[in-house]
Image (cartoon, rainbow, N blue to C red; front, top):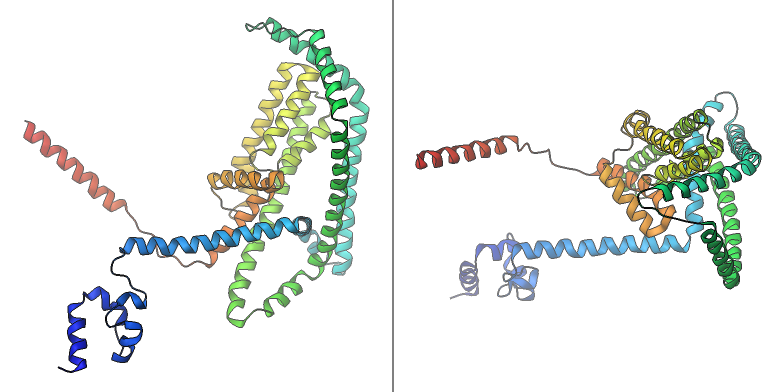
Length: 418
């Protein structure tokens, strides 16, 4: 018998699945690497189940993705100051771009950029100046009110069913222990002060870099993006252009929407605090404004601080009213203001937001909590735009048939019992 007949006989004895990868191949190709007698030599293993091969394929791909993400995080930690500066520049650009576009209608774009930056710095400086003056003017009276509030709180605890008694001697003892701890850890406190001074210098450096980048993003941002696209291969430019467009649309919408929502929260909180005659209404409203940039945890922390000040100044009833008022502001923000301002630019489920904020906080603290949601929102928007998915399947008919079958089985069982 010839070699060709032997080959045909051997292939006839194999299962069909084992020669599926050799379909269309010639005799010479089938002999390469022992493919005639060993199908696993060309990448197919008969002894391994199909589900295990699929799981293994997904596993090594997931490991590669996790390694790539870990590498990105590690590289970001090495240039964290630069990353923060660029992120702030993108935030400033997203907020100021509509103002620059409006001013560009009546003046050159460079002049419009400079004027918008100067006006924003003036507004921020004036706001902080007003806060400083208001705190300085009310600090002494607030100190006396705070002492009275603490005394009233201690009396309330003593009159409560728990009968918790805290005397002045206890307070003096705590103060003495605090002084002793400060004396024992003076060197550590001094080193932390030096670290804080270095952190302040880094903050100003990041702000300076962010301002520098913002100028170029506002004046030449489109040209810079076009130059970057032209450096890519021709086959990749369309995808990058589409992904970059949807990424900027989502990021800018989230940033401007968050800024508008935070400003509205601050104004509403200031109105509530002024109506209840709570001191330091201006700095507390600014604290609410800043807390709105930290999803989930920022607003509750600001509410707690405002309630403590209200408790110290006007008593527990005012503190409860402040908490209820700011909670109502949060409900108005979540159910009316945020959907109205952001619309469909940021479509993340609350569970995804909670997971993102928690993961960001665990990885990078407050910075991670601030930047996690916009990063996840941008990544999901780009993925949703570039992916190709099959049309959705409607399972309602199958579920209806299953329910009808269950009802029929129950009816049959009832007939049998009867």
